[in-house]
Image (tube, rainbow, N blue to C red; front, side):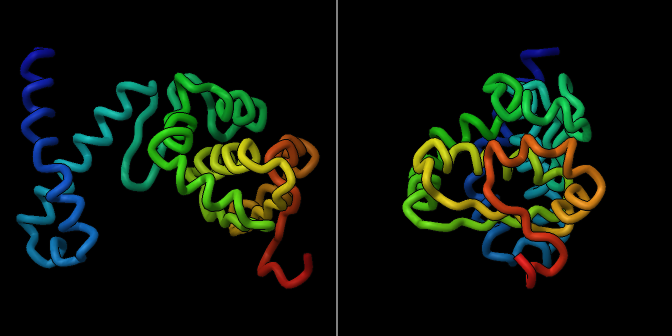
Length: 173
């Protein structure tokens, strides 16, 4: 069954770039059959990436099979685990020029609106800090506010990667 699965993924992924372009242009979702094909191919690509990193990646969520991303004890471990956290290699290789460009600023702010964004965002903060240890990094957003209000003492590890947390609407820093 593995050969058949690999062949199926390979067939779907041959059109990945074409379907990503369709999705980015915005026209694909007006034609239901094209949109279904686009989602099918991109979901297959996410499934392949999930297999390589022992996690499940979808359009709206990421589940780490060996770590509990809701655990304030597991999150710091996951941020450094190159084998379980796909974003470590993503920011070091595929998006390295973007990370380097961000690190050339004096201040960077990142908004996190859901728990699914916490590990990717903190991994990005770590990558930015690796390029420039003097950069000031703000973290804000709905999820950060809830985390800070409920668990700031337990979430003190955040300050290994960031300098400031902006809560609520961010008017008072």
